[in-house]
Length: 94
Image 1 (tube, one colour):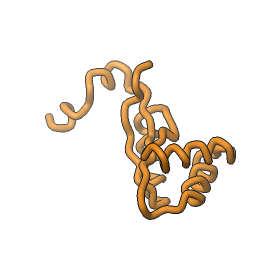
Image 2: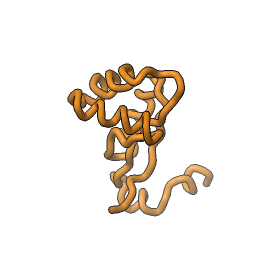
Image 3: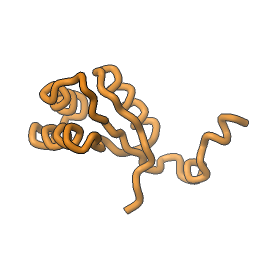
């Protein structure tokens, strides 16, 4: 029963509903390293990776990917492997 209650009604109806991976600011990693991670893992070009890195630095967070929950969990785990703080969230409705 515990696992069943953790799944939202929306996920049961549409398991591929959109989620996002969010990278958060931390006092440890250099901005150049964060940019390199975005370029290396996500394949972002330099301009996009720099923009996302500056969002993390100035706003405290940046959405770096969106898609199905399973992929976003993999992306967040990958960010943890690089030493970055990342979470996943349901994508905000427009």
